[in-house]
Length: 143
Image (cartoon, rainbow, N blue to C red; front, side, top):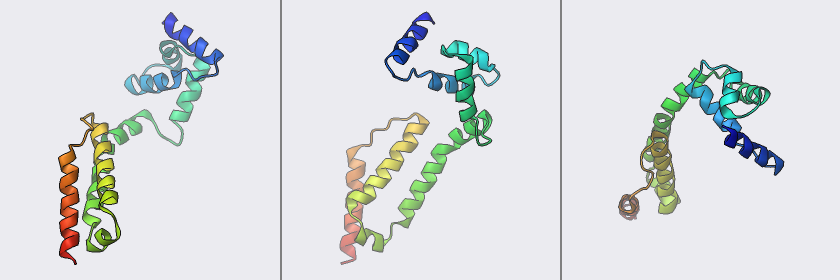
């Protein structure tokens, strides 16, 4: 713990952030029953700092349970948007958009949903090439 505090003192002296806010928020999510003083001690910051961080974190009526419920549903929400994007790709949009734009949006949303779930985020190149080929076939069939 002394090393954490020393690192934070050095960071402050050099005008850098200490990372204590991230630790405070993580501790609050993981241990919602801990007091602000206990969280501050574990995070290596002052109780006043922990209190400020938690007030911002919990602002707008967001308590830790609401935040956790959102985090659990976030990947599903991204998947739903990704599905809507895929379903919305019609012949007119294909004609107006590049294959790069369409596959890029799909890949970005896929990557984010995987990341949130803790799964591998690398996308096999052949999936993207398959998507490009399908788009090309659809575009060619409209000509």
